[in-house]
Image (cartoon, rainbow, N blue to C red; front, side, top):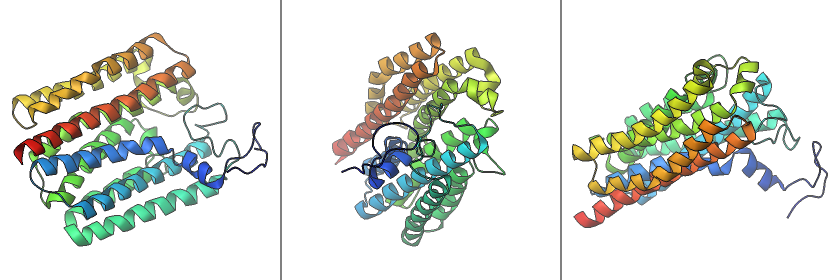
Length: 312
């Protein structure tokens, strides 16, 4: 059901409040938080640990933090001028007049608060290591674009995403299940970290010209278009190579090699990036990166669940 009020910036009708907020939090991107939590769960299940109630808390909490990160990022990107009505990246709810900048900022704070509340419940249930992982995660999400740190503006975006959407979240999810850490969870998190860093890097390749114009320093603007293309190829290659190393050292089960099914998706992504310079066409490469991360992650999850079933 939609409201028939005209949208201030553009034609058509205004979407419902619910639809607007779904757009604002960029709901499809929440898979970047859900996949690593489920991977941590799957590794723990392979090791004989499973706690469904704590899993639900961790899953919802991680997605809430991701939603808060998206909202706060859109707010500060709009305020800095990095995102405008011509941008392809953000949810566009501010640019289209669907929400005010202040509403988006408050929504981000509420999402962070909700995620932090669930995190505190997990701290009570699981102990201080969750607090040690959670506080830096919330800080990294908020200060990704927020001043005075603005990690995404000083070429630290990929590293931040790799750490917090890879090892930190997978290891945290494993700990929630098992109340201990494991080498397998760490190794499983590394290729997924490379994949999620690839999503951000594909985004930055698409936005390289506008970021240069607004003085936003990313690895893509520093390396230049050619160098940035090869970095994306390196991130994909490192993801697959780390799986091979982990399987050969028996840290990951042999079933993890199923991720190589996704190589055609990776090649399609790279083919677009190496051929195109138009942002609208490069947007398809970003979409392929999101698909690649999801498919790669799901195959890793299935690999560990198969290993768990075989062990039982």
